[in-house]
Image (cartoon, rainbow, N blue to C red; front, side):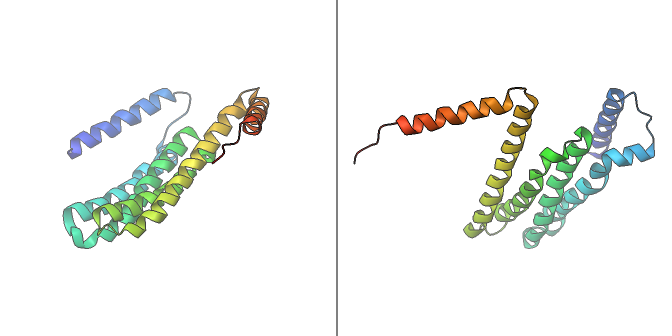
Length: 167
């Protein structure tokens, strides 16, 4: 991609966002308020990736850790700013560290012990995303708590009624 294509995509997305939010008055302050991750954090993460892939090469694999972290954090912050859902997106910060470490593992010397924290952080992040998003969806339903209670009762009864396997 060249600079012209990137600039065109940015202007296209900015115009679409402004068109969808026509009721608000837009100025430089509002643009900085909504798009600070895209203007500051994501480009820094991309800079670290560019530094590794274009400039430094295999010797500077360590720059991928902050590059991956900043890129994912920037994406998480941008989604949170646009949709005002910070309460549901915070597990993305845990995932950011896992992504940075995974890039270090993938492009580095592939130390297998690095997979332990990568997997722990990834599973924690996915678990928290699932718990908070499912909790949010059920909380918006008027039948949320009774449905969960009935599921717990049915699951408990199924466990108790199940025949024991003899070995």
